[in-house]
Length: 80
Image (cartoon, rainbow, N blue to C red; front, side):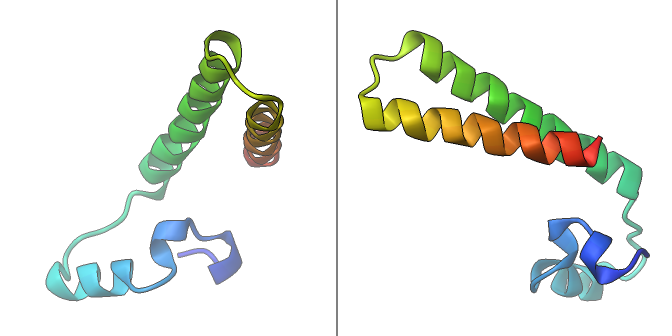
């Protein structure tokens, strides 16, 4: 496994250690996990754009949506 700071969120906290105790033979395929995590961020960007384009947003909501889109894009840029 990679160093802690490079590990996906699922490895931090209590979820994975508990899961591993219950399923000791389970092996995480990190490339598959990474694919689904990246896909989820892309889906979030798509959902935020839909809200931005089609919902009747207040100025504050518009600012929040644009900020969320920027954050997701920055994350994806640093990940890909």
